[in-house]
Structure formats: C-alpha cells, structure tokens
Image (tube, rainbow, N blue to C red; front, top):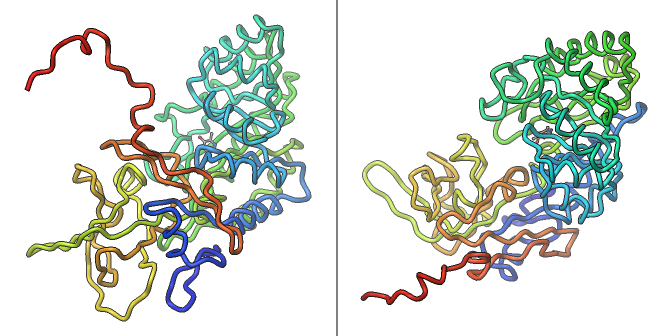
Length: 424
Ligand SMILES: *Cc1c(COP(=O)(O)O)cnc(C)c1O
C-alpha cells in the first residue's frame, strides 16, 4: 500500500504530479511519500501493540536525516551498524536510549562513541568483540549493556547476499557456542548482559524462519536464565520482505500474529529492526529518457539514472517495476532500461515490457526507497542525486543534488606533482 498513483494518466506522489517536481529539481532524484512512510511505520508498530516493544528502524535501508527524524517523532528507535550511522541517528534526533548497535566489526572509537552517547545496547557478534567492548568501557568508566547476536543456523530462503543466519555466514555467534560467550560476558567486569539478538536476513517472504529461530532462542534463553543471566530484551532483527513484483510476503499484522504467542512466552521487551518493509515501497527513483536504440536482437532505453544511483538490479539481480510517468496510448515494446555508466552490469531492468518511450520522457523505478540512495556511489564521477519528500501537495528537498565540487572534496594533488611541469 503506497501513495504513488496515476491520476488522469500521470503518476502522482500524494497530491503532486511527478513532472512538476522534476521541473524544480531536475533528474534523476529519489522521491519519498510522507504518508506512506508514516503509514508503514505505524502499521508495523501497532501490529505489536499489547506487548512491551520497541521498533528500532534499521537505518542502513535509508539513512536520510529527515526519515530518522520522522520515525523518532513516531516513537521509533534506530538500529545502527557504524559510527557514521550513530552520528546521523543522533543528528536526526533519535533518542540514544533507543539505539541498538549491530555489526560484526565495531572499532574501538565507534564503541567509545556509542558508550559515551548512552545507547540501549550493543548486539555483539564475537567473543573478541566482547573483550574489546569490555576494554573500552573499563577505560572510560562505563558499564556496557550487551546482547549477543546468535546465529541460529536457519535458512531464510532469500538471496545468498542477504541471508545472514546460516553457519556459513559471518554474522553472529553460533547458537551452540552462545552459552560460552554469555558466560564470558557475565564474567567481564565492564559488561552488563541485558538481552539476546538474532537477525536472519533480508527480504524474507515467509514467517517460518522467524518461528523456527524463536524456538531455538527460547531453549537458549531458558538455559541462560537458569545460569542466572538477566535477559530483558529479545531483539528479533529485521528482514520482513516486500512486494517488488509478485512476491507475497506476510503483512506486518500477519507476521506479528504468527509470532506473538511465542514472543510473550519470553517475558522480554521485544525489539524489532525493520528497514525495507518501512521504506521500500515508500520511495521511487525518477529518471529521464536520454536516448533509445535498437539492433537485430535488442532494444535499449537509455536513461539518466544508473547503477551508481540504484545498484540493486546489478548487484542482486533485483526486480524493480519501471513505469512511464505519463501513460500514453502507444505500442508496447520489450527493452532493457540502462544507464550511462560504463559497465554491462549497468541496468535498471532487463527484457521489460513497457510503452514505447521518447527522449525527454520520464520513468519511475518503483520500490526504490530501501537500499536505494543509501547504497548509491559516485562511480563514473556521477554526483549523487537529490532526495525529495512529498507531503500532500508540498515538496521538500531533503538532500540536494551533489555538484562537481562535491566529487573532489577532500582530494589533493601532492606538492611534488604540482611542481612538475605538465607535458603536452
Ligand atoms: C540490514 C539489517 C536489518 C534490516 O533488514 P531489513 O531487511 O531491511 O528489514 C536489521 N538488523 C540488522 C542487524 C541488519 O543488518
């Protein structure tokens, strides 16, 4: 459910025709619908009403300050995976007491920053990391709240790059070794065990993996409690999938209702870390057709957005719907929608049926709100695109388009090269 709709043949975001936004900001740009973001957050949050819980938005899906601010204003916390994300979360107005810090490779300075900020807890992924956090906490006279991220060895049945809960993945501590890690944690003087965590992967379209993981965690929590450990927080991670094409993931209410009984039996405060399900279908990428061309085998629509702006199709082979911003009564063709980057992997869609398009016309790449802008780069020295938030009939630029100066910020030609004479 989202607020991108055709009205009289033109795609609108809430009350604004997309072509009008294009006149103000140029192309390409990411476009988010405020109403959709609010709706998705609230539906997810309310699905767990009745039990003590905290929704920590997983900000790597989309880390724009305006979105952080929005979710914080709706009562959300944040799941961060780096010092940079923590910095952004705080700048966006998130309450540090509602921030969890995940990730396999936290550095000492990141740990110190998080401790000084007073975050809710660290989700710890190795015994060495336990010792590192203990060391930093001791040095600055703090007690570090920790949960251990358990790897339950469960197949999330998603893309191999985004499955994280299998033994062969780098994430978490193997469930059989977790009791040892917990014992270590409770012996280290500057740590305080407060919870247990797991995250199975991303774009999960079934509830079984969650149900199975909870069963395994349940047995572990029982035995930890018998050993006198206090497990107050159960962090189930994120990973609920969305519809890009014809996937039929459970909606947040079905997801919640199929795990709520199990969750209640833990007698914990539940933490959830949704990313994609909140922002994925609340954003699109708008791009302009530059050229079209064809040969005996193929037709290409060359647009001004590329893999550096939206890497999911080339990186994961992901499907994104591509829609013409203005529907015309024209013949349909089958074409590859490609960008200007010098890589054959630079495509947004392949072999796609779409109305014939002419240069200058606009397309919308749908479901691009998650892992879109946040994974974008400057490859081919392409300035990163603008981000726009629409609310009713207002539009707000929440990140301005980069310029050429941004591309060389921080770069420096060493003196010895400046002194050498230029040939030619
Ligand atoms: C990426 C990630 C999430 C969010 O995953 P989604 O599929 O976007 O919901 C949550 N928790 C952790 C630890 C992650 O790495």
